[in-house]
Every structure is written in structure tokens, then in C-alpha cells.
Length: 462
Image 1 (cartoon, one colour):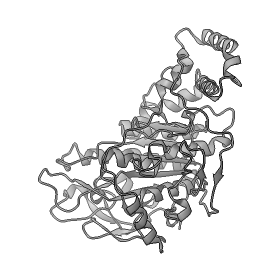
Image 2 (cartoon, one colour):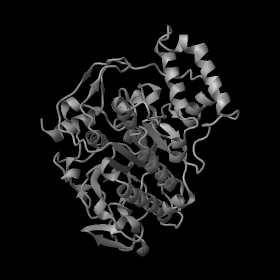
Image 3 (cartoon, helix red, strand yellow):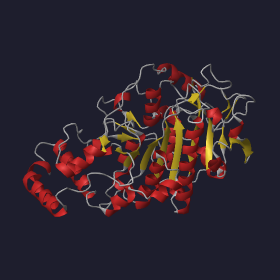
Image 4 (cartoon, helix red, strand yellow):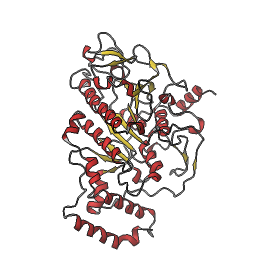
């Protein structure tokens, strides 16, 4: 059985689901900081994983070029043929989009002029297709790298949570930030069956920084309460006779306390007006500012998820407040993020990945002057040694279907391949199988790794 046949067999085994998927629990900023500020217990906290779970892997060659990942989810599914797989169809797209060939790539230079000016800094995958066309389900699929409605789907962790648990051993005692931070991402998938300490730390950027990192009664009074708490509770929370759940409470208290009255926290999670302006003065731009500052602080964060929603444009897609405005928001924030990471020496160690959950219909607009759902889509990669100016795969003249795969596996690229690419870039073996899942079935970092169904897009680095 060749690879394409194995791929099609897997597709038949796990067909497209049609029901939405509810988001998993997460560690919110309020939950996290209230532990230190008010001593609120978290009865929902999951127990720890076994100290030494059984893990199997297959020897593979990993890229291992990234220390950090910034994953940008374009929620709502952007039109690929109006953006990163541009098709110049006369009479369909506005002339203001300014289509032009840049470094041999057709690109809407009028729509995203700043990114057009740095085409040599990023790569585009055009031979990608989604499995499903339901927003909530497909958005979760991109974040957990598997069918949310399939076996173990409802307990599968976010890719960021996998990175967090894999990189936990590399943290130093002085690093106080969560390993996984989610900005403007209230809908980010959670840690699945992993402990809540590997959940996304969800923050909406504000210029004043994190709330609840000081106490109304002052630091001296807070420190006294902290010491008294330990005096009373340590016999129950440290090496607890009640087991790991209460020991987990202690870890959360300690982690939250490390962020109290911490100038590094204030500096990383707040921003100046000038920085906000440079990134476009938008919520997305502000999230990009924080992403850069959080990584620059080197406080243990290794995976950052940013969500930019609003791309579900079934009606009046070319109205000024629709695609043109949202594309400008993306253009300003992402281009400045790439430029600043490069100038501060962080781009070579940071992989930027960007994608929506699927694409949109091509050619002429619908009767409502919009575009509906379509599996064909794009993915964007930059940093961590990715070859800039590269385009992998191509579509037909309308953009409806892939005509050239552009990579060694000679098939359509799927979200699971994007997941494997992230793990490979981070030096994480994507074939890992953990046998600590609640059903005892074995949790694959990338589904069916033992069958070599999915794998990283190594051509990004060639």
C-alpha cells in the first residue's frame, strides 16, 4: 500500500464530522492570578500525569531549529484567493488590491503592502486543504492536530500544551511565565487530559499589563499572608497525604506568586503607546507587541497563540470595513512582528505559523457579494530558518483545487502535517506515543505516526 492509499484509507476511517465541537477548559488569567491575590481554590484542577509515563517513538530526523513558536489563528477562514494564493480574476477583485508579481509570486500588494515588501522573509504553503467546513470544529482541529470528534478528540491537548509539557524540563527556577500563552484567544483549545498547568494562559492585551499582580493591602501585608498560608497548609499541600491534586494546588500558588510584584511581568505584559502605533493600533497588533516582549523576556514561554478573527465573510467581502480593513490589521501587525523579531535577534529561533481553519469559495462572488466555505486554503511560515520567498504547491487557475503538491509526500497537506512541522521545528519527535491517556489507547502526538501517514514539511527549510 503506497502513501496515498494509506492516506485515503485513514480518511475513510475517520470521515468529516458534521457536529460542532465545544471548547475544552483552560487556565484563564483570572483563575491563575486569583490564586495569589485571593487564595481561591480550583476544584476543577486535573491530577498530575504519572511521573514516568510509558512513551514510545520512532527514530526520525527533526529540524530542531526553533526555541519558540508563535501560532496565529485566522479564525473565520480568510479567502485564500484574495490573499496568500492570489488569483487575478478580471472583474472579480477590486483594482485597489494591486496584484503584482513579487519575487516571482503573485501577491495583492495594495491589500498588504508591508508584507509584500518582505516576501523574502516568509514562505507560503498553497497545497493545503481542511478536513471539515464547520468553524468551531475545524478551528479546534487546527489546534489539536486531529479530529475533535474522533477517538480521544475530546481529551486531546492543544499543540501548545504538548510543547509545554515537552519543554518543561528546560525551564529554570527563575523563569516565572507560563510556557503556553494565548493572546486574544478565548476560544483556544485547552490542555486536554494533560494537567491544567500546561493549559494556555489566556490574556487580552492592555497597556496597563496584567491585573491582580498586586494586592490592595500592599506587598508587605501580602507577603505576610503568603507566609501564613504556607505555615497552615504545607503539611497538606507539600507531599500531601491526599495525593497529587493538592500538590498541584501548591504548584499553582507558587507559579502565581512568582508573577506578583514582578517588574519583568509588568514590562512584558504592558506596552507603550508608540509600540501600539507601530503595530497598527489594533488589538491584534497589541497582541503581537506582547508576543515579542514575552519572548524577549526569556521567562519560560515557548508557545504563543494569537487569534485574529472576523474572516467569515459571506456578505460584502470587499466592503471597506471587511476584507480591506482586516487585511490591513494583519499586514501592520505581522510585518512589524517579523521586523522586530529579526532586529532583536529572535527570528532565527522563533517559528511563526499562520493559518485559518479552511478557505473560501473562488471566482465570482455569491449573490450576497461574499464567499462561502471551501476546503482549499493556505498556511504561512516564517523564522527558525524557513526559506523566505518560497511557495510550496500550487492551485488551478481559480484556486479551487491543488494541482501541484510541492513536497515529497506527493499529496495534499493537512492540519496534522502542520502539527508535525511545528514539533519537528521544536525538536519534538512527532511520532511520540504516550500511554498515560485516560482510555489507555495511547495518545499520539501526531495521529497514526506508526503508519507514517503524516509528517513535517521539510521543504520549508530547503
